[in-house]
Length: 289
Image (tube, rainbow, N blue to C red):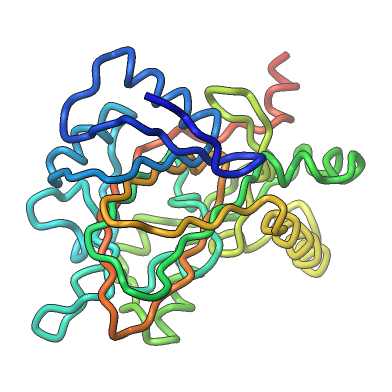
């Protein structure tokens, strides 16, 4: 196995990996360490079944089942179908998934640790995914701004984003049961990575709606400033998908955005999502000390 950098600040490619076969403990630990250190890890030219993707993903942790049950893989509910394809006139997956900057499941009390997305059908044009390093974004902030962030929280709200999509007609409205399953939550604006201890911004335009410690106008202005810092071109990596790509990303350390593709070109990917822990902020660590 060889780990090759794809960006000066983060993102790497793992060469010499075959996920159709169970990795021995040494190789798996090498892969896991590369994932934690680089935040985005690309493994190309894979030929795996849904069961093999689930088995590999489960070694990284307990898997999440997405709240939109109608878009789960029929043979593997741990897999969410990210797709613009239709069967009998109905979408088979999330056709508008991720067309805004976000961190997967940041709206849950225990947000996702990471995600694994496997390319099944790719369009001829477009379909790229952008990733932004929230470690690098935090490091580039002025010291006074980093100090101001300590102790502040952000409200993450899935219902907010779902309502926008429902009004646009790109996704059906949430049922009352679905909405009750994902109430708004508060998380620190700066979280410490579970494995490395590195600080990272933990905001995203997709789900972060306000900073409850600040007046509304000040909260809106501050969030706009943080959103802009988090997607500066210097901290972004653009992934051009190839057939058989498996891409792992660390939701504790990056946000991402799907750039979209022409509606008449099919794009279908299989996503597994690894459950994480409640984010710990720098202020909480200081109090504990």
